[in-house]
Image (cartoon, rainbow, N blue to C red; front, side, top):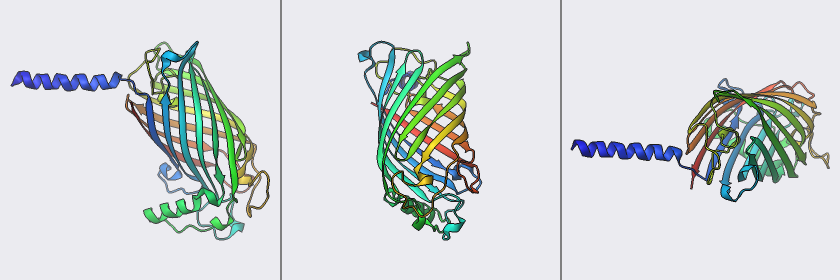
Length: 317
């Protein structure tokens, strides 16, 4: 009897740790942004975002040169914006337009052995009433028992959305204990909704993996990895101050081509942003919680803004 129990324990032990080291080349996940995740009742400006992702890693034996990993990504997302309150029947009280943005996106992610990351994505969708943001906010508020919303009649009007974005990250340095590193982060956006660029510094500390294996860059999926991970599990804190140049924001200024939105504002071209977060990842799962703090971005009485993000990802073959 003792031997049978021991055999079962050893079998479970082997299965458990075998699962830890196993590679998975597909990933599905959900990211939710909401200022309610600050846990003190705020409901304004960028008030809600919901994103669904699917990613796949390409066989790394087929990659040449210094390319460590190549992944493809498909996503759908919706962003929702309101003034200081979601109850704004009088447009004269608005300090930011009601606005929505709904899109689908395809992206390719290239991870290099020297821990440089390139990401390029194309999003197609719509802003305005066709984004269904008004109905989504009403559904959320009715479901959770929040206040009645009003003011979406004055939202940014319909406009086809085409947006290209490119991101580049490069490791600057990592300590000998492999527990702290710094990376340079940059991005550029061009399209009918968002135009701009940004530069930031990423700090991570804890049980961290190389950038091409890290859940921070959604790089936990692999297929025939070339390089071993530093850790089978990640648990780390991260901080990323970032300076943004905003050339155009259709959710604030309305369409680039028509001027039919009833409420619009001018933008502040330079916006500072600070992001803080904690991430836990195993071979199968990722759980991430972060807070984002943005300086004033509108030439109105609008205040600085903050919101939280919760991300959950599951990997499989």
